Image (tube, rainbow, N blue to C red; front, side):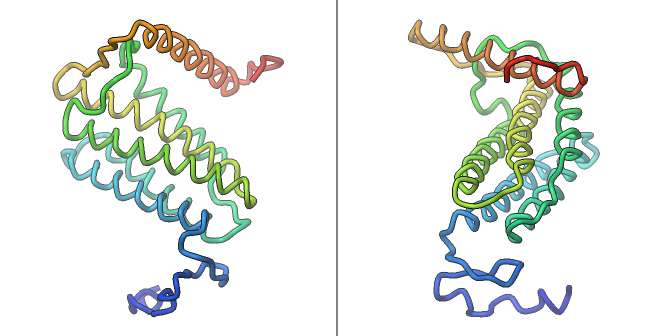
Length: 216
């Protein structure tokens, strides 16, 4: 590994192409390369989030594990047809999310990104995660992908949202809520909240093995 990574430049990418781990070369603006790069970008944001926390913060262990997952995810994108992310990764995310969410009060409105430097950074990571998910969805329309990877990113963005709430409330005891000026937005938030609740209920039933014939 040391010899492999000892030379930083190769000039092989000067033509606008890059090499995949299977030996094939594709354009640097290809959807697959965008997925690889955005997973790397997300990993950097999670790393920056870790550096805003105290060294003994209990969140760091989970965030480090996510960083390893994201490296696995990038490697999966670099080898078309490979599978690294699986249901065990998703189950761990869901269990971790449920644990952190237990101590939070129900949301009464949308939360503004911010509340503390760490919470703001976590929201930024969440937004990049959503972008990564959109890119992977687009990639799936033109090439075969591991659907578990898409599910992982979807669940990871949920976890990062919950962690951002934990961080905001930890440091100043409150979250900054969006102040709607249009009554129509209030109705929209209510519908979004109901849909989110139903989605979470549906997922909880799936995890508990109680789901049978519910629509989904």
